[in-house]
Image 1 (cartoon, helix red, strand yellow):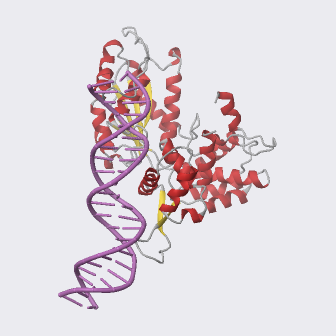
Image 2 (image 1 turned 90 degrees about the horizontal axis):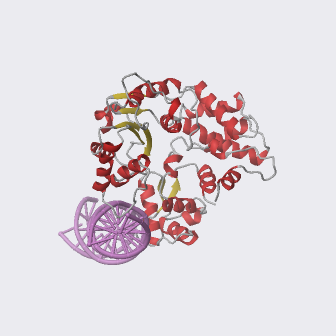
Length: 390
DNA sequence: GATCCACGGGAATACACGGATG
DNA sequence: CATCCGTGTATTCCCGTGGATC
């Protein structure tokens, strides 16, 4: 699939009248280039990382904040910009005595949910810092760590590594802290997580912290308007229409965007304009304690495929884990065994991605089976998943 | 031959329930 | 009546194996 094809798929043009121009712009799991209303926090991070442009390593920084407060949004946007900066416009302060580093600092963003082993940790960092390709197998963890250290000799430019989602769903914060010990001293770190610094292992090693507060109403309204203008055919989100979402989301941008997504979808099917009835319906339909979509979407491909099949099952097929396993296994294009599918379902439930509710006690005997219910907005999940897969 | 890790698969454990036992 | 037992399922836990790569 080439890039044009990808772009075409993202712009539904069934009849040229479609309200939604770009679903990714509405996605709660995607981040836009310029986060709305988070200037001061960005300034804070920039100030903290100033020294790396002078070839010095600032202490680890821990960025925390409640769900949907813009942590990932800020870090991804900032890192994207910083890595893309042409050499000459980088905020380097030249002094007459200092020789300019031969190459500039690298910025690496890691999601601890995907980078969840020591091997993967070192490999990902090394891979983004070094030109030659880094092996994915057949080489030991220690080898990669050594290569990271050797790099120092040739090119001492600092590396800034952000590790997102230190919330216990990926690698545990304590484990990450251990991995960090193995890094060269020229690596600067940003840990990102929900817990306040005092409640996470990363807080102990951090030399600086920054805590985000939930979005205020006006900020959330701005954010929704902004996303709507990017994703919808016309700037069709008025104040009145946005209000129910703003009220409901309680400062959580993820939830607000999920609601906007659902509302836009509904409006698209009905009239083609988005009004208050759509946002009210969306808010009504969504659950406040759902799992964040980016967490679902960051699961490994096979597990995602199982979930994708699962959300299409009718209630009868989901009446027990056993039944769901059969139905999913049958509809899956990949060739996972029954046992593995079943394990994936149980593990997803264990992770809180699915809910297990007691099912019908069978007239016969044995332990009562439970059926599984997705704990994430399935409509949004379906759309986003399908966008990425043919 | 070494290495990582996703799968597979089975053993161990938990639960439900009726009936037997103390 | 309380507890234990046996049977049948559901769920959890754990670890060996093999593919893919170097």
